[in-house]
Amino acid sequence: MFVISLTYLKPLEQIEAQLGAHRDFLRQQYGMGIFLMSGRKVPRDGGVILADAETREEIEAVIRLDPFHAGGLARYDITEFVPTMTADAFAAFREE
Image 1 (cartoon, rainbow, N blue to C red):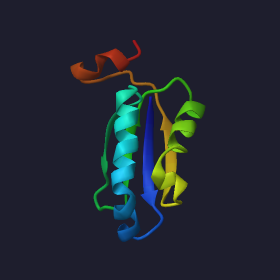
Image 2: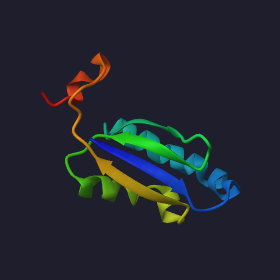
Image 3: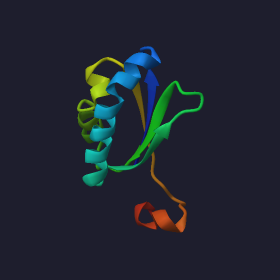
């Protein structure tokens, strides 16, 4: 499991201009079962994605597909973790 923290590197006007393409990218990853949850940070200086993948390399390859990455709009910090406790809705991701 991975937490991906995005930090915007450009003004919000440039972020907004690519937001539709970024959301299309997110939908694709949700459809493939890689992304589980995502949203804006508060204050709005980036975003957070919760993802499920076998390896960090897989996550890095997915991130390269994001229009925010291609446009140099965001930095991505990746944290891998092993869920040992979850809400019942996430029990399938828990390592016993």
